[in-house]
Image (cartoon, rainbow, N blue to C red):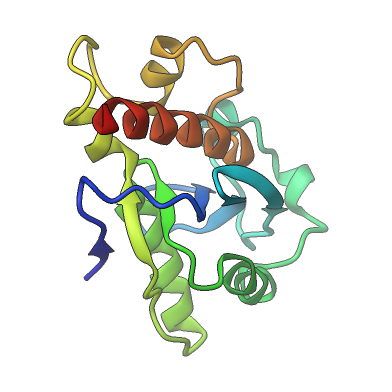
Amino acid sequence: MYKFLSVNEFPDDYVVFDIETSGLSPKDDKIIEIGAVKYKNNTKVSEFNYLINPGIKLEKIITDVTGITDDMLKDKPNILQVLPLFLDFIEDYPVIGHNISFDIDFINYNLKEIHKKKLTNKVIDTLFLSRITIYDIKNHRLKTLKEYLNLKYDSHRSICDCYTCNEVYQYCKNKRKH
């Protein structure tokens, strides 16, 4: 189970991360991109972004949604090569994501496949945070929140979604503290 921080805990040092996948099932589908941004004192200090060769052909719908093609992935490292780098990057920082249980389930499934322990980092879910903070919005999808906050990042690419997610976190953090 995840160690969610309380809705009144807002760390200033954290990592926002996001993945793109070939589908919705950690067991049946693959991670095709991992993006993460590390913040210290709410300021970006480093970025992690890898396309990942899933060893399978992507379905057209995935390419249409993400813009990621089989050709972009063919010479990239596989998840076994990228996961240790990702773990080194996030260290023991709290991790933040939008509907983060989806991302963590994929990460943990792949960690199990390479006989590593599950993530034990503390967790903040901006989907939940936005639901208890922002009321005048039609839904709480990241794309809708991006439009609500008038952000210009792309959608459905890991690193851009990390930046959007961070803006949602900061917005909710500031709103809940006042």
